[in-house]
Every structure is written in C-alpha cells, then in structure tokens.
Amino acid sequence: MPQTPPFTGQLNTGVYNKNLYQTKEEGYSGLYYHDNNLASGSLEALIHHLVPTVDYYPDRTYIFTFLLSSRLLSARTSSCPRCVTCAWSSSDSATPKRTRVRKIAPKVLQLLTEWTETFAYDFRDERMMRSLKELTQRLANGDEVYRKAVGQVSQGLIRRLTVLSQYEEALVKINAAAAERLTSLKAKPQASIQRDVLSICNDPFTVAQQLTHIEMERLSHIGPEEFVQAFVQKDPLDNDKSCFSDHKKARNLEAYVDWFNRLSYLVATEICLPVKKKQRARVMEFFIDVARECFNIGNFNSLMAIISGMNMSPVSRLKKTWNKIKTAKFDILEHQMDPSSNFYNYRTALRGATQRSITANSSREKIVIPFFSLLIKDIYFLNEGCANRLPSGHVNFEKSWELAKQVSEFMAWKKVECPFEKDRKILQYLLTAPVFTEDALYLASYESEGPENHMEKDRWKSLRSSLLSRV
Image (cartoon, rainbow, N blue to C red):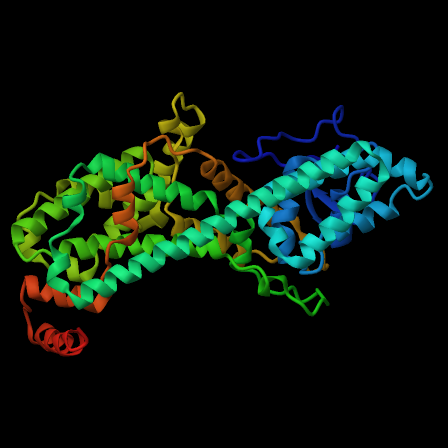
C-alpha cells in the first residue's frame, strides 16, 4: 500500500498502516508513487486524497503537508474549505444525502479541527472564514449531535485568532514605547546615558533567560504557513485572478526577524555608549557571557544576534577596548556560529540540541531556538531550487514532503513552554531600551575612540554635522 513518508517534529505519525487506513485512492487516477511514496499528482487528485470518506481518513502527515504546500499552487484551493465541500459532495453520490452526512461528518470535523488548530491564521481571511461557516453550518444541520462539536471547533479558532490579535497589539505598544524612548534620548542625550543593561541586571544567566522568554514568545506566534507565504508566487497554471498572498502576509515571521535586528543593534549601542574604556570592556565581557549562556540554553538566535552586534563595524573598530578583554570565550562562540561550510558547526550543535530536546527529562532541556535567518534561508532555497510543478503539469509532491519536514521540526520547537521566571523590568529594558541607527553608532564609536585615518575623520565630521544638528 502507498506510504506517507514519516518525519519527526510536530507530526509524529508513521507510515500508512493497511490495517488502520483503508484507502479510496489505490484505484484513483492522478496520483503517482516512487518507492511506494507519493511523489506527484494532479491538484484535483491531491485534493481528493485529502477529503475523508466513510471508510477513509487521510494520514495526519499528508494533511499537514498538503495544507502547508498547497498555497504554493493555487490561491483558489490552497486556503478554502470549499474544496472539501465540493469533493465531499461529489463522493458517494449514490448514498442518500442525510446518511452520507451522518457517516462522514465525524471525519470532516476531525479534518477541520486539525486545519483550524495548525493553520488558524488562514482563517483571518474573510473568504476563508465565510467558507468555513458554510461548511460547519452544513454539518450542524445534518444532525443535532454534531452541533456541539462544530461549536467547539469554531470557539477554538476564535480563541486562537483573538490571542494572535492581542499579541500583535502588544507588539505595536512595545514598538511605540521603544520609539518614544529613542526620541527622549535624542532630546536629552546626557540624561539617558547613565542607564545601561548592567544597571538593570549584571547576571548574564538571568539576562539570557529573559532573552529566551522573548524568543519563545515570538516563535510561538509564527504560523507554519508563514514560511511558505513569505516566498509564495502566483502559480502560472492558476487562473484565479486574485492571489492569496495579497491578503495574508508573514507578519509574525517579519516581527521575529525585526527582533533579531533590534537585539544586534541593542548590543552595539550598549557597547558604544559608555565614554570610559573600562566600562565599554565590562559591557563587552558581559554580553560574551550572556551569549555563552544562550548557547548552553539552546537559544541560538539570541546567541547569533549578540555575535552580530559585537561584529558590527562601530564595535569591531574599538581596538583599545577589545585589547582590555580576554577574547578566548568570544572566539569559541564565533567558531560555533562560523558560516563556513554552510554553518557546519552550528548545524552540528543544533542537531545535538534537538536530540537533547527529544530525550529531555526537564523542560529546560527541551528548548531549541534556531538561528532563524538561516532556517528561513534553507526554506527559501528549497523553494527556489525545486519546481512546484513537473513538466507534466503535476504537483511535485516530493518537494512538499521536504518542505513539511523542515517546518514540522520548527513546529515542535515552538510548542515548548519557557520554564524560566519572567523579570518584567529586564524584559521591558530589552524590548524598549533606545537603539541607535548605524550612523549614530559610528558617531558614538568615533567619540569613544577617535578616527584612525582620513576616511574615518571625514566620516566623523560629516556625522557630527548631520546628526548633532538634528538634536
């Protein structure tokens, strides 16, 4: 019997088992298998393969894979429950309508439950929600016993969308507070310089824990479809003039990338601001220790953001400051995140952290926060390097399996709850402390350690003239 390739992560299902899954597709045309695995098929056949019947329910791995990758194929079918309705209506046409509904309804409800739980953000689109309501209304009308189940599906979806809206509103407030503090710093620079990260907390482990809180909260709100939606292009074989990507953006993914950039610039700002070399060296050593604690926790994203901040030119040029610290620990961390050989060292460490998470006895050992930009890059090149369609016009489902494999691993990581106690004061500082632009960082760097050549002198004069005149 044709199998569904198993992969670890969010979907811990194995292959199809003939004793558990009876299939309607063994004689169905349009699906093609390679080494007993689904390799390609027409879009219509893949949709048909998704829809339950009286004696068939699709494997959860297939459900996730199809719903994730289908948005690459058609704006019309990738995100509309109507495709389930149409396929369902056309199946078992010889069976009386009420009998058919009664027999299939539990499985359709299960499919909708999995859809709304895993891809809840799909239903922020009004067309999607309207189609869902039409289908659930049909189920509820079919039998009294299903009305309660339909209500639970709808309530669960509304609850998840409400949480998402609240999170996005909180992000807007945080960004506004950060902008306001930066404005205050520009207006009264000397009044704000005295406060730095060491005055808030001088314990590297505690700061690493709070960074992990921020990372895990932001990870938890990224929907799996955002990885695909970020790169989606309209399928040339899709005749639907409307494109779903116009209505659904990868907002939470983008917000997470923005957080990485903010942390990098915050580290650089904290290092460049102190006037005294001794204080700058203390801040450098502190962030090296924070980065090491992040590595031990499994928080690779904050680790890389800190390393990136310390490698920014305004920081790296502070040679007198670097000479005052022992760089051995920093060199080890840089080695772990060395980009050579396609980040081989990091990928080895990530595999180790993932294995630790799988066999973990404590919640702390379950934490895996990947270097997010590299994860996005991997998915991007997978998408760009493999065609969505084969020359025959069929969907390249082997690509879909690979895409789902990568995203499902992320889904497992994002479900872990942060075990550390929150410190509101530290969190507030990390999220809203003033962060300098690159030009402002260069100016602060030149003020701390003067220009070394004519090019730096000219840039220093230009920055003093342009930036200080705005204050």
